[in-house]
Amino acid sequence: GAPALPEMTFTASEKVRVDQQFSLNCQASNVDAYGTDMVIIFDGYEEVVRERNSNRVSYNMTATNRHFRGADEIRLRCFAMKGNTHLVYKDAYVKRDETPAAPVYNQVNQQPRGGRYYSNRQAHQAHGEFPCHSYILVSEIKDYTRQKTEIRGDLAEDVERLFHDLTSDSQRYVTGENAIQVLNILGYNGYKVVGMVQTLTGTLQWTLERQYYE
Image (cartoon, rainbow, N blue to C red; front, side, top):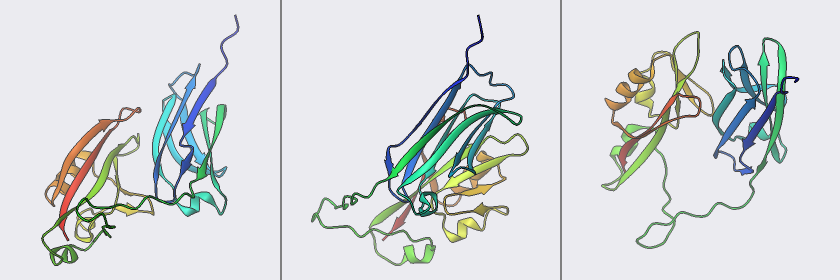
């Protein structure tokens, strides 16, 4: 009989707040992974992530006001392509969550904690004996041209300077150092690995913690 036509599933969170992370998962069936690029774009043209030689792609994206473009939803499209030929695509829409975020209370007096992040080490050293923690995510990036590693979260100013090729935008840092080198640099500067997972694309992702005092 005739070969099965390409099909696609593309799932994303139904709602998301600005600065909140959400997951994108896209898979093409009846498509040979070899030579296929899986690409997710938003707003019709801007590329979010690309997975080469694969029929699936997953990505954790952080919503910003720029993604909404003044509207009430983020418009996303996933497509599989070989060369310049689009094999199959599917759209997804993520609504802006306008519901108020629940306040965070501590367990002592049930009052808002008023927590804050200090990217400057000196600010942390001068505000008391109670510990607070900063968390970041370190992820391998599959790139067949050169090694890359992604860091999500806020880095202290003194740590940023340790990476000679670090680039950043509103969502993440990227460096040409391999993941082990990145973990070693962070480990020597107060960060500790508290979790590790393997993503659907086969890359590794680590959660790191750094303790401060406030």
